[in-house]
Image (cartoon, rainbow, N blue to C red; front, side):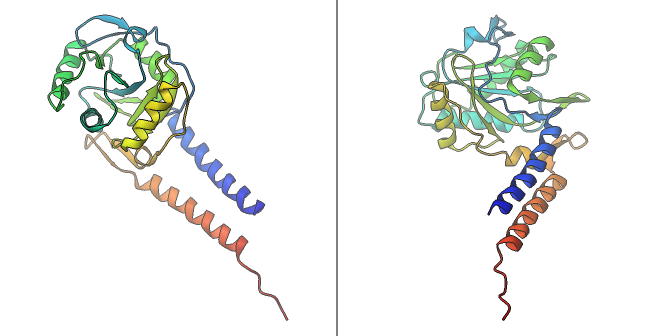
Length: 253
């Protein structure tokens, strides 16, 4: 059993090390428990220059997008409207949402237009300041994205980046990451509850962020065969080693 566990840990360690190396430049570098710099200043959708501390007053679903994104940003924002529409927790009371553009070229007018688009998808009225759409300069964007572990790279006029929700406490403490573009109601509820109590929790899934990558030529996210194949090879290798180690040896007469 020791041999099996050590082997699995080594294989997992190699996979995580390789994956972490890839995430240094692009992707999510998890910093659970880290306190975000809430004194960072941004423009809200009305053109007001405000700090995150002024905005964040309750458990918050923080997400980074750029408003002209041709890929996964729109599905993430659409999924957030579904959470607002159908989740048992009430926005403005139990939690709030803060969306920040990581493209410094995007100004508050575009943030306002994007906000109007998604407000139109809501099936109920929500408090005015319960979902904020922010924009800012490169220094503010760099400060908050680095503190949150959100790494992205410019590719022409677009960006290569991951999709995730980052759940934080009213004090700015990172409680949990929810990766991908679809989120289970239970996971969202647990993450918000943990954030409200100042607790942290493990990441639920990294599957979508791991399996998909941005194709600048096609301006879309595509299935990353190399990464998935590599993961499957490691999995089968682990199963094979377990089988060989645990297989009963024949007793010679």
